[in-house]
Image 1: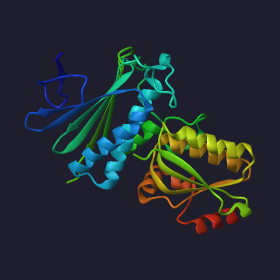
Image 2: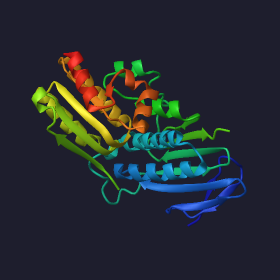
Image 3: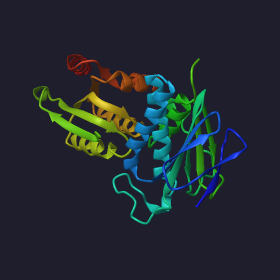
Image 4: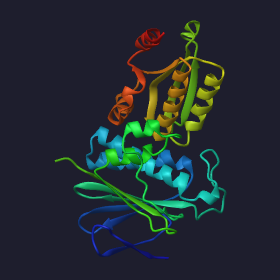
Length: 180
Length: 120
């Protein structure tokens, strides 16, 4: 089955075959990769490794690579924790076989001047766009401690956008620009 | 690929310090292992915990959150938790987030011991 994916950088779409890890040649300007993953916390280390390899290959510094890896990890962790509440996913018990709907996708846009990563889930969506904590003090005062993941994403990435129509899942777009 | 491991060490036991080394990746998947270990120690009344970060390759917000909670709890009981031998990568993340002002982070075990001594 072929589906059309809309390229956020251009209006024209690209054809791809879903369900596999696929490299799509994105015309002149870069490469788009799509990962489809189950909401299994075991995937986190593989996602970090892949993102880290790509970012390093793009010329980001070691420090920037570690920040990009971490931000994608945090975004994926939020999906695993929050996107499918009725499924009672836990971090020690992987999802049962047959729960293919409990998935997330990561789109990695490798562009000349930046890396753009979208983490997409198909869960409930959120009524309010998550803001995370605004400062370390706020995090330390909050009981229980939460919101640090989004705080980190906003701190380490250059642009962060959330989109979450209620009932339609959530997309978090994260962009890191290459330094001159 | 390395997962996560906790190694108990006997050094400094005579000084009442529980010393563990954590190895690998501390993320949302592996954090429960450390949580069980730390809170087991805290529930037994341990007042001094030293954690060697030299083989820790990665820490996420889940790991940081756990360490914050454990640190706050142990300090409320008059004790302390000290981190030692962190890699530059992990240290930079903690520093950029401001956590080096919260945690006691030593560059060596000897420095860590002095931090415990200063406290008591």
